[in-house]
Image (tube, rainbow over all chains, first blue to last red; front, side, top):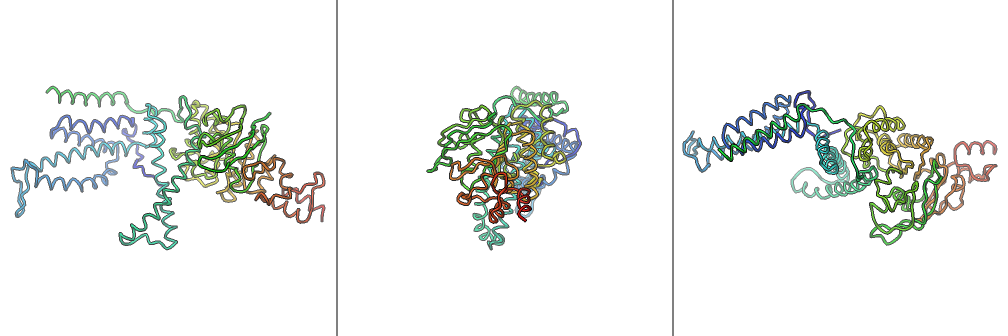
Length: 255
Length: 280
């Protein structure tokens, strides 16, 4: 069964931390560098996120994602170094083009923040089973309907992709060109996407009925098949993260 | 005791001109196995959905008459209330999988979680249901990795774990291969033996003849006949309703060989053999 989830099944302390805490960590990783807008904070936060990825034994798995992000960051470093408004001190020159120190530092600062934010999301995505995340949220009062939508995305999207593949094969067997020039591909798009959308809509109706007769809309308290997972130090991590964030906010307002 | 009473049921889908069900009445006793036959568009699926409340609550549309399941009038209760009394299994095994669960065990638990069944009882009920459907060994597999027959049995397990008193199966084997469909029939038969009231629509007359206590013949939204399989399949005018008799009945009809006791044509392999042996 193909899955679109990036979850990596490893045994680490990070895998035993409440998914909700990981979400709060994302919030903290975004908020702290904004509240404390200096270089050191960005650096500390970035190192912290990378360190956590390493603790979670998923650092290697995060590299392909970073590879993609670096592509964008390189353009940021180039452009800021060349054109940032506060550029004064030249770092080096290549012919007519001069690269400036101020722009470079600014770009570096952005880079740290981006790596940090991407890292914090990767911590959640790589070390949390999607179903655990959804269950954790539903237990905390997320509507089970919304929980179902979140949970089903991970299975139904791959199903739709295999339907898409089947329909592509079917259309090709009828002589339709689906590969080659862009114009050919664009022409092939409608006859492919039409059946996919229609068959998905029909399936949605049938699935809605099947859910309905299994009490999807039943009123009253729902129960869970699995016992609530025992996560590590849930309370203290949660309070710790909020304390740090509040402290940063207080620092920003009063100092 | 009457498990199901249908009285003058009429129904029209929203936007449709013609009634899908035109004045249907019949009664089913507790523990009976009822087969529903009829050509395509004769109203079989609509009738099935009317028994569990999808008609009218899911589709809306114009509704008349009464469906009473175990004392509960369908029109006045929500689908989730009715789902405690009667469950339904649909044709396509794939679209019945919730898609949000990662194992067969969790999939079967879905209805129970919604009903708020306590955890311990939930595990017992799931174990029973999986055992009855012969799926204990697959309980940790991903629902989408099962074969069609297994998936359909998982769908049935998900329903019977909710402990309804009646189960409706709407052409449960039409998309399965012979082996998968035999698996499902065996499973349904074991439910029937446990005393559950079963209502099944099916295109294969041999299966209906073998398993059903009574047959409801539908045509154009009306009940043509509601009698024992032998009576219904011995009718002269079956072809007019787009229904075929079992192959054994057809052969014996050609040879004009009737059973001695009832004067009807044989409908199963065993009955046919009995009659043919005497004839020889």
